[in-house]
Length: 165
Image (cartoon, rainbow, N blue to C red; front, side, top):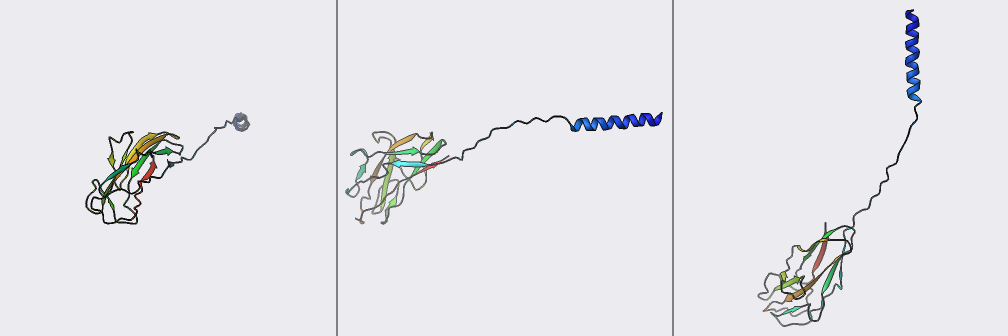
């Protein structure tokens, strides 16, 4: 009798093992996509010609109208930064106030009347934040030359616009 019960138990366990191995399977797919972020900016028209102006005087892009427009060409919301540069090829230094023979002032403004000009620095400053892909920020520029300038060659006083997250 013991051997009959043992045989039945062994056969029962074998049947469970075979039954477990023959169960049906089912699958499902998870659709997944990805887009690499693109951080990009362009500036239109990208050129300012202040022309020839007197030492210690100012000129802006209001007249004639030469406003610049920075556009988020990326595919994510960006912060647009702006900064000035030291002049090239000369020796003019970007400063908060035009002074002496070498310190010039360069400003930017987002209002159409240049009532709230902000002095550019060599460090990034926020031009606009939360700029959605495809959107833009217009701005004007204003330069004040050194009042005692001794370098009378044409100076490149570039402005850099940078896009970041």
